[in-house]
Image (cartoon, rainbow over all chains, first blue to last red; front, side, top):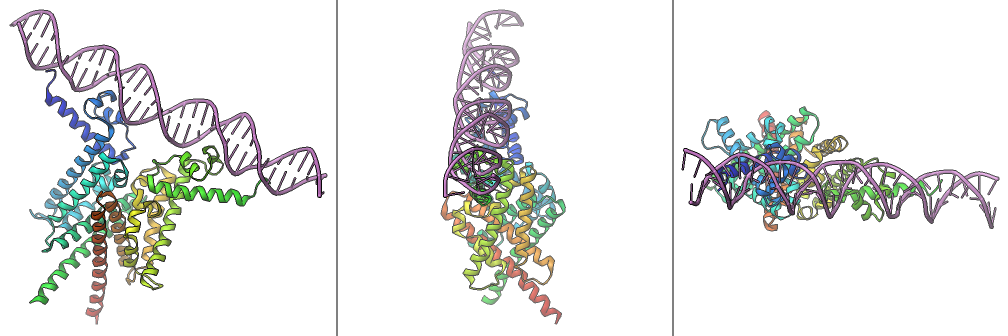
Length: 208
Length: 208
DNA sequence: TGTACATCAGTGAACGCGCGTTCACTGATGTAC
DNA sequence: TGTACATCAGTGAACGCGCGTTCACTGATGTAC
């Protein structure tokens, strides 16, 4: 056996990591295979020893980025609140931050280029669809609502505001306006989730 | 004078309309100048008699699409409620519809390709920034909140959920799951806006 | 009214460019003896 | 332990392709006389 399998797999992972970063920064069509390979210190020809096509890499990088973001959010929210078990509001707060605004290349792939990925053909769009479901499923786990349908509403609604809010903030050219958008959306999500909690409490009180 | 100026301007507008449609369907990089001109019944060479560059057309088409969507939302919401003066909730309801889900090419340009447009260079990204401000400004006008800051929160938060919600719904491959996302986000926006209205009412009651 | 003319929207071949992918190759590696 | 060998990750030239843009042209038009 030439080289070690470990070495090949390590290179493969470095390509995925570089791609996940570049795709979020320039979009899937904004980065070339050659540019990704160059950023890893290799030439473009070797790419096909690791992936069947650019599409295959993009779909894998997309899933990688999504998983990375979910972990980042939980860790950051836990650190911010000082609690082990964080709520959806805390995750939204962590998501709608200035750091995230300024670093799309390390942030949520859905906010960075969700529409493009969804429009793509099947290996990519399938992974995009799966990523959305992964986000919702994970947020649902952080909901304190008693009914599953209510948890779904909280998770999906919050995710929509998070992704859309970050996209809008990034779309605006004035940095101050962008930060104002983030603050407004944070406040919006907070009141939506509080409303649902209150409605829940009221229903309980009335039942008694 | 050869031909009439009217004829030239009519052709120009047909190109903008076709571009606005194609861009929302395939993204700004997913349509070629030749394809747009073909869809209008012309050849690609004549394009530069109307526009300085593809970028110039994209930025104009983007502003056109945004204005079109704002008008559509107001008309549709007014028709649905039967009232002249509609609230942000009504606009959100009109936005988060199945028709809009299934017709990105006629829908909101921000949900269709906001991130790509924001990432582009200046004629395009400037128009994208302006479009976001136009959306927020228009939604603010539909808020019944007494304070400006509260109106901004309602408008920006609702827009974030609308754009993000539509993007998520389109990103999901199962049509039933997509419709569930739209329903969840509608419900989320409703409770957020109700919460703000209630908080407002409570504050008034306490003041008395 | 009829004719010669100037204009310019639109045509279509051609350009340079960057892309994804292919392929013959190279040379560092682990293995067999 | 030392040498010959097979493997294959990575190289770099080359490919076909579609793109945005250019440009010499054409022919329908409105105008001048």
